Image (cartoon, rainbow, N blue to C red; front, side):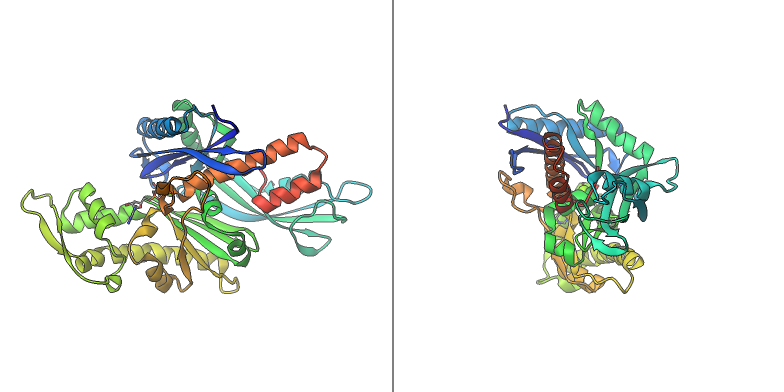
Length: 412
Ligand SMILES: Nc1ncnc2c1ncn2[C@@H]1O[C@H](COP(=O)(O)OP(=O)(O)OP(=O)(O)O)[C@@H](O)[C@H]1O
Ligand SMILES: [Mg+2]
């Protein structure tokens, strides 16, 4: 049996489902005690297409993780992605309620509620309301208003919504696999990934997290320590594999294999050209292909994905927002030569992001493939810790708020 509180992250990706189990100490430190991953075939571009197949993948990943941990899990934090995700920034204003005009947590809750009062289409649900910054009586840039004095409290928030039926389908898969969502919450995948791969300085300076997975490319822009923009593009590494399969008339598994083994992101990047064997659909002798010939197929697709990312960044940030750089993660960031090619296309410094060192983490989790999975556990641990703290110390609003804003600048 676990010694501590257990938090579980369930990353239901387009190509794999990954379950990561963490134990959280009283101090909030996370130790990973189990993980399991199974290929997923019930998803397309980040959304559930086949519930039964997705449930099977979830059951497989959970069983493996439970075996490793040596106990059965409770509720999980599941990630969500897909083109249906949309986000906007919204403003809220209230008058501070108390007679001495000291701002308390209740005021903060009210002003965030006020920011939520906007017309969200009836087919959508709010996934996150993330406070970015507060202002008190016109003074901008306040990060933690609790305990300060003021008459008029304003907030800028980032609101993420998703199509209700797509969110319900994720919930259905989780339930059919015999699990439940912790606090009924679904987490936007790049929000989770950012916890695993970005540091506070990057978020403060201005960083774009780009998670290029199999079916989606998730984007989260961080500015002044908070989330400024999120978006999901319906393109990813599966498109690259399909292009290879078509170009060389090869089965999908073979296309996937050669991409991972020999795939350079662009012709220019290939360090030393050489030939390799690829089997084709015609069942004859395997064909000999050069690394450069393969890179010729990969390059236009990756360039297209990165150009879409660039368009999205500049659409929302414009010229006036300073961005210190881009952190690339997700399985497709592993294509050889990716970081320098992305720098060229995006015109910004690029680094590759792998999940930071969490105690107990096995070597195989230290890969960009698992950024979301590890991030979900970190997200859950902080959320859980905060709830417990709030229950134990209902009077310590100031401390609570500073912890919340330090962790995520997010309200659940
Ligand atoms: N070493 C590698 N080199 C190139 N591509 C790789 C490598 N390893 C994995 N990939 C690709 O990464 C993709 C899977 O990435 P990831 O596991 O992040 O996606 P996912 O979470 O399942 O999907 P999504 O987040 O899009 O729903 C696949 O297209 C796979 O081919
Ligand atoms: Mg993913």
